[in-house]
Length: 388
Image (cartoon, rainbow, N blue to C red; front, side, top):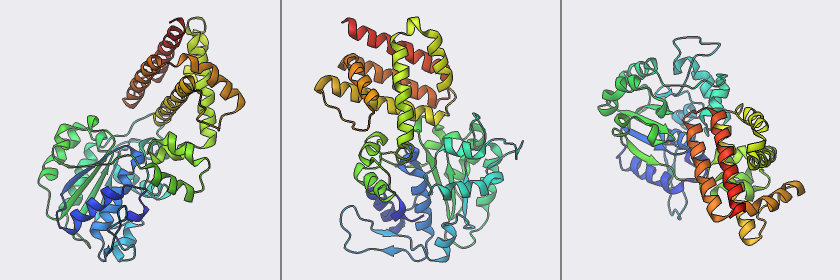
């Protein structure tokens, strides 16, 4: 992965380039941000740049352009681009599957992981990885066996590069007993050893890990960079996709027209039932049962999409401006009628409830209870907004 393949993030990349070229590389760095901001892809490109034997340094660089990049052609880069460099190691969340029923660790799935990363151009997320593994609703962890393998791999001398690099993706899934195993090597690593850790949420990280790493925080991808990339990819309705993705490339690709249509149908059905929740609880339960079958990331995607739709209803209620020309006539009629319930006060309340639901889904809460509670509470809010 070269830096030029990263979508946006040019200022951050140039900062990392300066660090490498000035020989100030920290032995343990934490890339923190939503999966769609490109943390794994950036860590991989950074590792390739560090190991490249023919770094390309650019002159007369304008603002927003890369200062340097890996060459993509030297033996090191060639091996990095197929994720098979002997001094590059991967650790990632895993669990028992039909193929590996017990004593699982990252090494058991390394070929599957490499193929998965390459198929997604290194823009990866836990939900799609779990789907790749076929683990249903089980959650992966980084276990003690993974920690022992990390220590074993990094005690060896480098084969070809200056550094041995261990990329730990999903480090917020690192179990406490596993973390205790690697704390010493993380704080006092062997010579020429680099740790590149990737996580989405600092609140889920063990303090002992957080305190031993240098933070690299990834901001959302700029709208301009996102739009430029999606246009090259031939994505339709780019303006709406960019607006709804919120700087997250994975969300952008999940915002296909078919997905948006299904989400809008669900949104309409959910809010209609929420409005009459006290007389339609059985119908609400059936809908909640349907919703709960989604994977965790899809549930979060849907909830984030509803925030966009509530906001559009609010804008229409306040300004009578329809900001989405992609709706069907039925959907537009619903938005016009429903918008009268979305006042400044009710919008704020609904946002708080929805953001709480997103947090509970992230923490693997019971989806049925989360959405039933959300529906009842939103029903109360919109009914009260009419009565006032």
